[in-house]
Length: 144
Image (cartoon, rainbow, N blue to C red; front, side, top):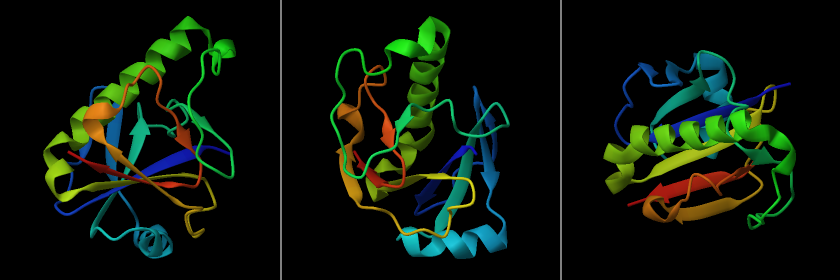
């Protein structure tokens, strides 16, 4: 199974490749499953290099948790660099949409119909790509 990252915005995010990220339309069946998770109308899928979203750091937990040194010690330098790069690119991708808010939902393939476990509100400028990770199944709301 793979992690899938969906974003919702007030205005559509441009489709296509942006660095390592690929922004795609969401098909009607999956969109119908995802709709209850989002309050924003425009939903897109964000993959990494036309694949899944597993390159974004993520953990499985029932509650949000804080980053701690050594948390991803087994990922290796190359994987660490990719995780930082894709998170930086994601923040760049949504930058122009932050005024109206951005919602991000990292969920496992096949679980798109699950309601979020909870919501994490963040200011985009406070996110450090070298320390950030998603908790699977939580809805992230980003603002300027």
